[in-house]
Length: 241
Ligand code: F6R
Image 1 (cartoon, helix red, strand yellow):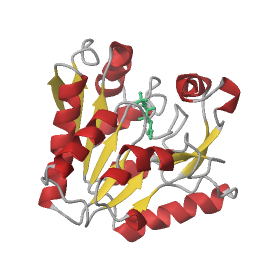
Image 2 (image 1 turned 180 degrees about the vertical axis):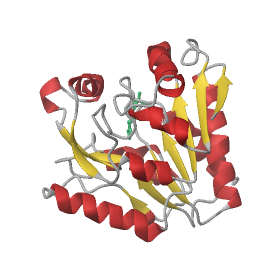
Image 3 (image 1 turned 60 degrees about the horizontal axis):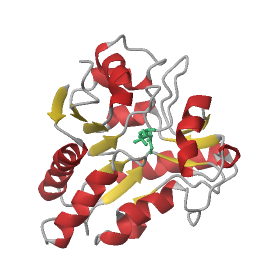
Image 4 (image 1 turned 90 degrees about the vertical axis):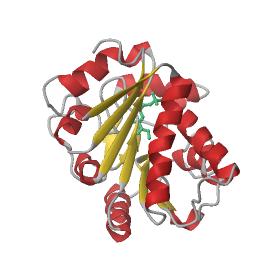
């Protein structure tokens, strides 16, 4: 595992964007696994800036996102499909039909999950997976649990995740209680993984996840077993190391 220390959020975002852009330049038809949340927004902004300068071409790439709230439509401004459109896809020359997010409107969880696993398999797997880190160590919406989940599954969000995400909704009651998420097994099959993390609030979980025992109670701890993980963190997030 490589740990890259950035001085602040802007530098963290540029460094992570550099890794993603190198991936796209080296393999223009690659499959990128993408994340939502507040951490990668700066990374996406940087990629858009470089695209506008003519430095990156997204026309050949495919993307698969980690997760989606169950019950939210793509038009809902809190859905992760909406997030990806507004924060990245609408601003670059990506073929939207090659961008995938679990189908939040599919009420049949088993079908939603097996369809998504099939999509990822049809893409040929993930070349580079971008991850954020939840306050409780979750990656995607793989919450602390008794075992690591392999494939896409439906999760009940923990109270700490519901509370953390409430900032994006009009009220706590509006935060969906369930989500579809890519499994830990699928994330671990990505050839390369980049984790972005910032802020002092993540300092303790960064230490636990990347230097503590490997346990499904801290889902990100499994990343210690992956052969190509780069953590790009700002000084605050890495301050407990
Ligand atoms: C979202 C996702 C989540 C977030 C995590 C951190 O697609 O996969 O695991 O990465 O909750 O969120 P932020 O970046 O908002 O702190």
